[in-house]
Image (cartoon, one colour):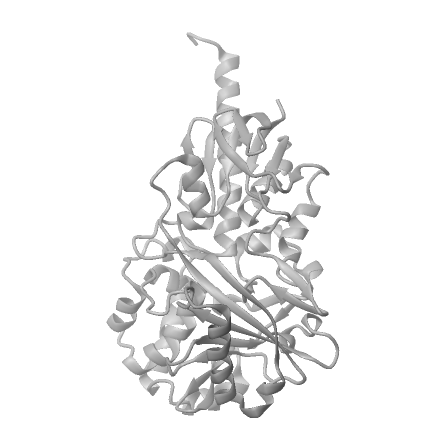
Length: 426
């Protein structure tokens, strides 16, 4: 037998599964189809810049991330707790006045919603903070849009703030994603920071892999088919095991398991620009509250983590939703026009470093959403399944699903061992 457990997929879920198996003393192999681990959490170095595969952050309040990651080693650099919103041809700053008091006056006067809207946000966050995560996922569920309307938020703040903000989180500009996910996002933001590892988002999977035995992770090993006790690579190589954990992205899991699960996914484009100087000084994400043009949100990444750019230069990340069919030249031209409208002639000196078009950016997240803490990873005997698409997409739930798959296998193995030792008829 090549390993007790073969984990198919070297993304965050698969690595978290491998770490848990290793901690439990279980021999395992992780097979990754691409040339490196991490799934969507990868970082490239281009002309001295660090480019993550799409704009991504780590929420420091994620319970599972706090449990298995060494934050000090990641050297996390936090965003300021707020945003700049582009509205009516101007930028307005909004923030949680309790966590970003220096933006309190700006938030109060910003025309990003009514005073009542801002009070409703504070009340909602305060109410959510009294709950635990399990409570949040037991609440009644609807779409985020319907939830906000039911809570009394105005169309103005829904259009100017919630759609670009939450739409960017879920890659869903019409915010049809689950109301539970929206509430969980606010719950997490109230408890910690959105942060970047100083050496790129790819340092997260690298840290997990470094805790595992040498040789247990194999790249460029795409699985052709699998069954209980056996995995067959596309190369024809056969590997035997006691159990298989499928930790791939959704469409690949559907192929391997030959099931109707899971549902579709949303794509995203991220364009990175090198600039001689930053267009803003604050460590805030910029939201397109006007709802026109291709840009959903923008971040001067090097303001937050200077290590992302060479000395004396700035790195700007632009996120675009719902433009997957557009060719790169047309898309970049449209983005350039909007950047020039926002920041003027200085953008003529910005150079495009790279464009990432991520087909499976995130799974669809429309209701109903299962409680991620209660999803059973067992598919059939000897086959387990993990991945964020089974419930709520995020680093938190990818890691948790990986651990739960490992724990389910170890529990089943323990029960099998006890039953075998007891023997028939006992």
